[in-house]
Image (cartoon, rainbow, N blue to C red; front, side, top):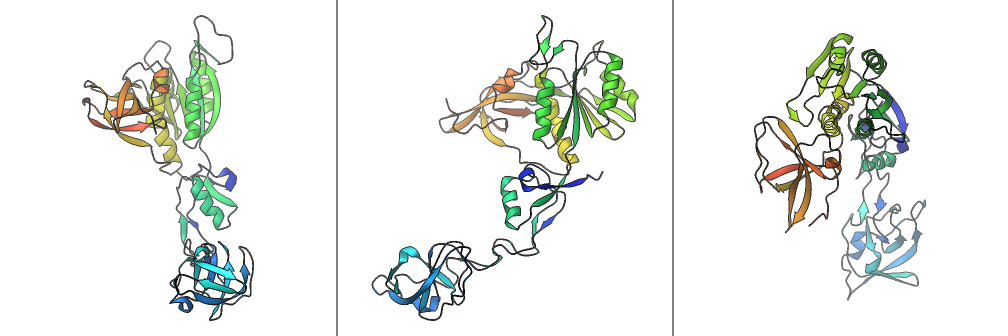
Length: 392
């Protein structure tokens, strides 16, 4: 399906996705540019220049960055030029300031330079008509700098997918409110909403819904007005887990899959109603995180027609044996540096209800079905945090 485009300012374009190929309509630099402070010369004039036998040139003036000039460097003459200034007519090279000395109206040149030395050619960075960035690029700070350098003030980007997020459960209470003895504070909705924003979406928070069939149905219908739906809880097969059945009845194709061969996160459900994707995320917080990372992240990036930012990974040695499992496993690990090598020490393989196992980890190792990991085995770690300098 096509995705609507909007134009945003450079200030608002970071972490947005380019909706059109972007071409430059100018040369960068737009003129022959001086690379460093020095003296503009004709290279043939100083072929024999050396410390013992400096070449003497007549000094005719100075040129600063942004200054228009009518200076012309004729044979035997030179002018002082600043970094970023335009190379004066007649000159074809620049001698570094450190290799020259000005006294009165004469400049001594102590080192020869070749034609084009210390000069940036017109269009050397970006040429007029060149494709600057391709459609689908996830815009980073360096991309925005490049766009600004060609003079564009607004950028065409895809509109953010709007994701409706809500949680179900009689036991859930909003953070900041009074906690009853049989209740817990709701956390999954905040975690998932943060991930939606991180991966390019916009959140509509539909709050907490009680475990009531009609209330959940009403909330689902409201959520389906938006581009995508993520519901936390009600994903299992308990008496009040109404979501799978409701999604089956809401529209075609309805529930596509329920229960995934992965741990944590096996109760995850996936559905489509009226072309709107629905993710049923398990109530256990680690399962909820894994479910959205596994399905929500790639789905958002697909809607935005982008590969997103590169996934941060690191190669490490496994810090302990992990027994074989018949499902795909997401092993939470803490990467440390010991004797010059990175080691991935398991924090938890199960404990899907313990959110702190995620915050105590700085990475995840994925075990495929039927595999096992041995201590010392080299593994790829998906990084959750920066591990630079971490050691024990």
